[in-house]
Every structure is written in structure tokens, then in C-alpha cells.
Length: 466
Ligand code: ADP
Image (tube, rainbow, N blue to C red; front, side, top):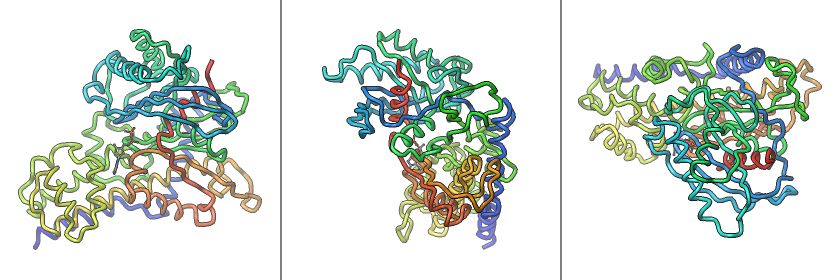
């Protein structure tokens, strides 16, 4: 009896710690907008790096020709080719080949990693029919890690995230590393755009819908970028672009604010991670981490009671519960929670957990995902606020509410967590509406683009081809 009460307490405390009432979400919105300002004002002015991308023009449909893209994400690697007909034609014949990134390459040397990438491209090109025997191929590289860019086609790796750690890469030009690997493999391909996945997603979003102002990635990791006015990028005085705008890569995974609801489980996860004090927002909202937060809470429950039997050693293994398995438990709608039982048994080697325990697990998944979805929504509204698209006139807008007319505002969104985890997505949308209010929220459209970042990067390769 008493022990059961302890488990209930663990859940109650956890729930309280994850509290995201709309008042708190609005504080997160404000903090995001303030940090964006700070990150644009000076180098190192905020945990948000607000990186320049040198993308000053987004694809608009006039692009023509055949272009390639390589996409290096958190778990998958993709090669793709698109044919562009110009005149706003739809993108024809895009071909994709995807494969998981071999685990050992994530912590190997940069030569190993880039040789693997170059070989994959070489095989992909070798399979082409004669029809596309181009002279020199142009390629965009989607590289989903923080870069300090020197131009649209060159950039230095600032740090690894998402479990990658190749020591001799940080500080080096990623495009040059790739270009060198192409030379080693005898490939005549030019890297004409080096972009972050969020930027690729924004490019494709904008190609299809000119009202697209920002892009969000929520997969293994999370990030966001948006179109900023060049005169707002105070830290780079003298920067000029023809359009007067530039895409800014926020690296929002590193966002932090004291208003974020943080629990002991988050603190432990962060402390035990290879990058403590880093990527705080990402550790609360992205797919790499959600499963592990759940594991930590179940471990605590198991150590407070015998509800889950003796403590299974598997409960002590970091990251053993992947987010897709967590989602499967969360979305289990069988009356006896069969799927939950299966995952508990297969992943944690906890057989025969009673229904009561399984219900607890579903509840834990719900708390974790609800918080993640709602915080992601607050982050999105933070961006909208910064650019004056949240219906309030923006913190720099200065216009009164009366003469504000809310413009149609599209946010491109991509990533496995958003596209495959229905409840996450529902919580995100629900919070968006709560924060903005129905009248404003109806002008804000989230548009999913599958393979958007890859295709978008190919489009950028076209825009910036030589
Ligand atoms: P990337 O690794 O490049 O971010 P994706 O955007 O496809 O690739 O995101 C993959 C991530 O999405 C996985 O690591 C996982 O966290 C999450 N994910 C994928 N499928 C599901 C699912 N069915 N339920 C919940 N999360 C999922």
C-alpha cells in the first residue's frame, strides 16, 4: 500500500516539475525573443548563437537544372537528386537513397566519415542512367551541426551535437573536408552550398510558399532558423545583402531560460551527458532525449517500490529506451496496454508488470511529451514575436495593436518526432493556439515537408551555383 503511494508521489512531483501552464509558456516566449536579440547584438551575447548563414535569397521557383544534396542528420544519411524545370514548376523526379550512419563513424576520424559520405555519393551517381551525364555536378551539403560560416559554401564546425564526437573536425571547414574526400574518390562535384538542415527546410518551404518565414527541425535534435532583416543583425555591422535580409540559424537547441520547467531527471541527464550545460532546450524537447527522461522516472519508481519487480539492470542503461518505443507505449490504446507490456519486457526485461504499473508508464510518457510539445510551441511563438508575427506588434515593432494586421505566416517543420509522434504534434498545436489565441493562431500555418531539408539544400545549390 505504502509503496504504491510512493510511486504516486514520484509521478506527482514529476508532473509538478514539468508544469507548463500558458502563463509560463508566455514567459518562455518572451525569454526566447529576448535571447534572440541578445544573440544578434553581440558575439557570445546569448546562449543562442544566432549564426549567419549567408543565405540572403531563398529559392523562388526559377531555378533550373539537376542538382544533388547530401544530408547528414542525427541518425540517417541521405543522398538525393532533383531536377528543376524553372518557372515555378514542381520539383520533378527527386530520388533519394537513405541509410543509417554506421555507429563507429560518429566517433571516428573526419577522413573516415567523409570517405563514407563520398563513397555513397559515388555509388548513387554510378547508378544514374546516361540521361544525366552532367559535366560538373553541383551539390548542396546539409550538415546539421553548428557552423560558423564564412560564405554560403564554407563554414567551420563549432561543436558536435547529437552524440557525434570526431575530434579532428571542430574548427575545420566542413565543405573543404567534403571536397577533399571527393578528390580522393575521383568525384568531379562542387560543393556550392553548405547549410544547416533547418535552412534547407526553410528553402524548400519558401520555394512552395512565399509566406514561409521560419523553419523548425524536431527530430533526433532540434533547431530553428528564420529570415531576419540585415539591420537587426547588429553584431555584423557593415554586412550588406541585395535583399536586405539573411537567414539566421538560431541553434535553438542551446536555448536556456530559468522559466523552463526543469526536474531532477533533467539535471541528472544533463550532468551525465557528454555535453553538460549544453543544448538545454534540446535535452527537453528532442527525440534523442525524451525516452531517456522516461527511463529515469521509471527507474526512480522501480527503486521506490516493487511495482516493477526487482530493479532491472536494464533500467540503469542510458538511452536504452528509444523515443519511438516510448511513443509506442504512449499511443497504446489496447485496454490491457499490451504494447506497454511488450516494451517493458523487450527493452527493460521487466516481465509481467501489473496493469497499474503500465498505466503509470503511459502517464510518465505523457508528461514528458506534453512538456516537450508545449515548450517547442513556445519557442516557435518566440520567433514569431521577434519578427512581429505573433499579433502583438513585436518587441521592436512599435506599431499599435490597432493598425496591426496579422499576415499569413508559414513555418516549415520537419523531423521524425513531429512527423511520427502524433501526440507530440497535437500537444504542440494545442499550445500554439493557447499562447497565440485562436484569432492569431489561425494565421499561423505549420507545414511539414518530407525530405525538405535535403531538397531545399539542392535548391540552394541551384541558387548559388557557379
Ligand atoms: P534525424 O536523425 O536526421 O533528426 P529524423 O528527422 O527522421 O532524423 O528524426 C529521427 C528521430 O525522430 C528519431 O531519433 C526519433 O527520436 C524520432 N522518431 C522517429 N520515429 C518516431 C516515432 N514513431 N515516434 C516517436 N519518435 C520518433
